[in-house]
Image (cartoon, rainbow, N blue to C red; front, side):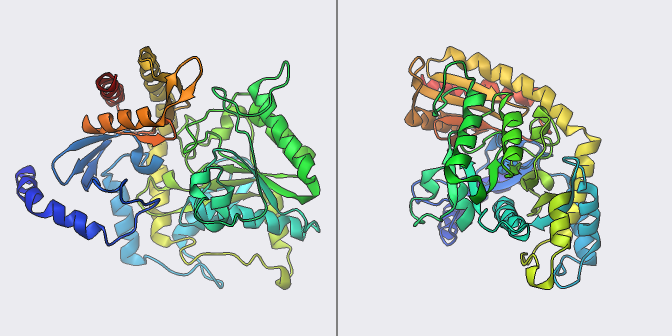
Length: 453
């Protein structure tokens, strides 16, 4: 019955909806890219249902974040129950609320030992901005105010606040917002498929990429560098999974030169890669952890940073004149924190990290089978986070963004939502996905590639 109603509504109202939609400015907006927007009416599990009656398999879990899938009534109920009591109160000026206390307590040591203190934000950009400010604050309190620079990687994505825009290593995000903010340095990423840095005889990609970090520290002067920031698996930069030797070397270099290591786990956190947090794959832990997205599976805006006990002690011992003067209106939002608590409970009960590990292997193997197409240059992934790189020449590894867009559009026409990131297609479906639905991703992508070929 509902679809009959939608059919009647589609012809008369969808054009009107899209006209009205022009009154809002969308993220990374250009009218050409938003000319035929998908109007989503509802979601269930891994499926999106559009206002014009289409059923779309969401291979991106929203924006890498709807880990438990759409339509989970437990999360809606958690939001409702908390909002009935109190949706919001300030977390400034000596006030707090029970859900933020309970979620911070739940997260203490949850990701990594020694990270027991949480500051809440509304999302990933705010989280990384908070991490940068906290790193600068820490070194100033330690009597080293010249340590203010942040080293990031080319191709990294860390957000779109003014600071995080220039920490991001993708020029298209920066081009129209200059002049560049001073203090951000970029080095080659540990991309095993197409490493862009210098390789010395006998080096692995991991060793060469780690050496690039140390050389940048020495070039800038360790006394000027506050922190190094890295996504364990780079998302928007092409779903780049680093070699296994990379992060242990990075951790040792940061320790050697007194550099704080910030792990941007906005995408990789909360089970996505087969571990609760991705640096556990390499037995490495950061000094500051940035998180967001899947902490609520997208059911409410929430993010945060966790800081080491040493950083917490430095903040606690400050004089009034050295107060950590940072915060947001919605820091520790009561309803969002209540949803976060229920979301983690749900993920623990349904063992989502283990599911991501098991089903990630199935997805990776399926995508690997598509290498039979002449334009599939590389397939990579960790857990339910995979990328398929499209090239015009496999031997030369020539990037082919135009062909990537053709495959993307053909997949969309076949009811599969992916995301083009450069010349790669990203896949990060809800962790609630079934084996049959994993296979459906591969089937639909294969059909799209066959049509393009």
